[in-house]
Image 1: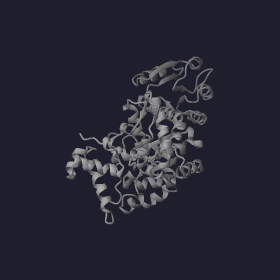
Image 2 (image 1 turned 120 degrees about the vertical axis):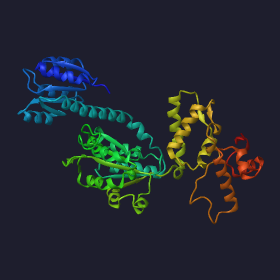
Image 3 (image 1 turned 90 degrees about the horizontal axis):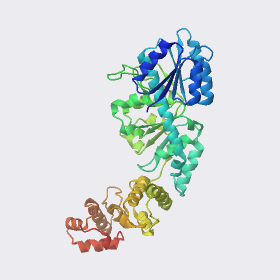
Image 4 (image 1 turned 90 degrees about the vertical axis):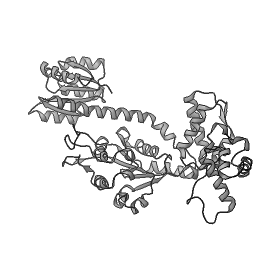
Length: 455
């Protein structure tokens, strides 16, 4: 992300030194040698960062700060002050300056200040994008079922609270959508929403990502790094798949949640934070605790307000609403003249067990919209695994107490799944002829004989 930076200092040597230092960062650099020149430039263009001396003749750095707070509040202002004038810089911070440097600042100090400002600007940009999407995202919490209505009511009830929320549910149910709705329904909506996917982080990097580190804290730590908690100040942090945080870090996380402070890696100086913590999991955390993989005290601390999102198979009545939503979404994106979905597709969806939940449904609709050459989507536009009615393995599959008919059906469907829906190969594995297999499928009501591939 290339930034536009305005440097303002009436000391020509200082001005040129900072400009030359920042030229190597490949940002767009503009210099002004007085407050008056800077004011003229600011009236012509908005800058991402203004780095200004505090003490200048006629129009001072404080005057520029006041002007920017009134006319361009998103501009990040960095102040430069002489040693012994730190009081003025602190006053500027209270007025909204992002940071300050003391003359003479080294190139490393200048670049570090710009990098910190860059992080904030990037985060603001991301949050603006997310806020622009939030209404559309919130609409994706679709459903008229009682379970979905209860979840929406809970979001409204707890959104304004600082309490930690644990959002649980299978993959693809919409846990992150609920988290975003919780953030953007509150007064924190204009503050950062920072996410950390705990399952995607290498174990050795999780602590640094969460809490940041000091320069030299470990091999490769060549500069100070702000962690996700620090970046989320005033806003919300989402710990996605919190069960995957290493057990040795869970105690430190517990302390952060309890005391609202932490130390960067390599530091002993505590940093106070005001952050709302949301967490998601697709695990059974009580079982995780019994296996020694998750701390019980941390579970109680994050489970203050639990929200459990039901799997799609437990709210099949919501499928027509979801189908309509995704059909409209991908009609717009693909720009294809597909006018509707055949009722047989909805009947097929009602029989499916949806292991991938809402995400799987969306992918099915998107795929069908892309590949279909027809005006109406039919069952032929969907994968064989869906058409064959892949069934859920509950309790390990074959069980004592199953009827012979149930066991036969399970065996046939499992074999078809294993053979990617190929009837001829499945019949060969089962030791029956393809006609018998076709008749069995027709008997189960899973598909018409002509719909099953023989190749």
